[in-house]
Amino acid sequence: MKAITVVEPNKVVLEEREKPKITAPDQVLVKIKAAGICGSDVHVAHGTNPYAKYPVVIGHEAAGEIEAVGEDVKDLEIGDGVVFEPITYCGKCYACRTGHHNVCKELKVLGCIVDGVFQDYFVCRRSQVYRFDKNKMSYIQAATCEPYTIGAQANWRGNVSKGDVVLVHGAGPIGLIVADVAKSRGATVIVSEPNESRLKMAKDFGADYMVNPMKEDLDQVIFEITNGEGVNVVFEAAGIPALLSHATEILSPAGRLVAMTFGKEPIPVNFKAINAKELTILGTRHQYQKFPETVENLPMRLDRVDKLITHVFTVEEYQKAFDTLADKNSGAGKVILTF
Ligand SMILES: [Zn+2]
Ligand SMILES: [Zn+2]
Image (tube, rainbow, N blue to C red; front, top):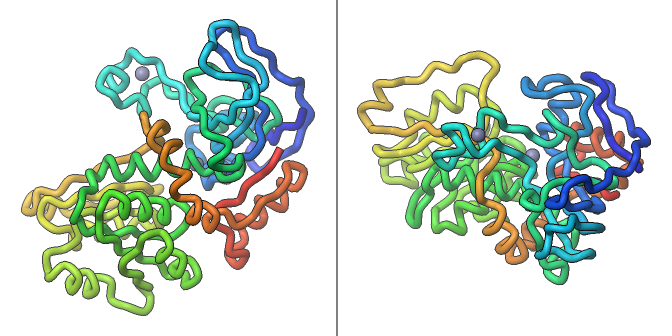
């Protein structure tokens, strides 16, 4: 079977591997059908992901079909469609004991620390897969489940509630998903993005206001929309460190900053504003327990999912797929590989 392996930073190969077998009664064997390429896969490929171990099969956003189950697995059948939770955790450490399994001290991330899903077959524990209804969405569509769980986690972290005014920096796939989830939680959504074609997409993902910060004064727009109060939640999904610092200025009292990105260097924060307005700064990493709700409601979002997926390539075309994702003029949103 085929696997996309990063042998060492900047050396990606499509290699032939032996098909894995079930070795424990609680495992399942999944035929991978479709998998999305994430920015973090690119970081692992380029050696810029600080957690990565090499060599490693990349990929963590996949959907596939159950091909075999271990003897203890009674609730899945051969042919069922499943998506993967791409993390494993110890269940015992402080983070796990307090419901933050996604930051477990022994966290293992597929496609980064352990082999991921860019391969024809994958064996994992039953608890790591979630069944989806194949009549309601395709494997390609279901592959966007994982990034949607990231959007769900970020919104949960920010406690986005009905009536909140939310600002999302960046209209890449994750920014758009965050906006979509915020809208469905009843928020008014502002999306700020300098790339006009991406910004246009934000409208379909629930943006009530689209701002090009190169053309408009974002602070002024926020001031007007919120009657001078400021936004209640800021999501930084653009990867610009200065926007994290800037958030303290545009947040309302009791506002929340959800930092979906981080800079290479420490970023100065105005703690006077944090204190005066009782602001909350929240990290967000992967997700915990967001798969059941996401698998359930993704079929209601297929109009958006189909807009998010701009390119589909076969696994053999992986180089073209990576190039398309890297090309700023390709219009790439979510790029999916099929197996
Ligand atoms: Zn991802
Ligand atoms: Zn743990």
